[in-house]
Length: 174
Image (cartoon, rainbow, N blue to C red):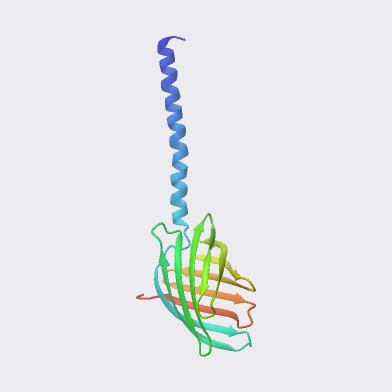
């Protein structure tokens, strides 16, 4: 091989390697942008309030009033929730710290009035979260749907204290 042919092959190889590098870096950037666009916590930050109903373990149903604050981190993949609800005879204060990655959420929760805590795990897409909150001897399924300035939350449990909570919230200031 002549010196000029060797030079041309090296230039060609560098070009091919550069193209492969750019193509492999491009999808990674596109994937990060896509992940940001499908973040289920997007649009949740701020204070929300509303009401709904709670079905107690006894079967009695009561009106419930709730306030919740969401603090979403800058990357958009983590949210801190402070949910406070009260009916005529029941009250709960739920703090949660939830992370999102690849379509799944994981985290921890702490209920202050009952002094219990546990884990959260589930699936999420933009505007909808379906998860299980559990601890030793207790489990509750919850779904959360967020559309603009409105949010609905449903909590279903086999607890002797509460069996069902349905809440409709609206973002404060809207």
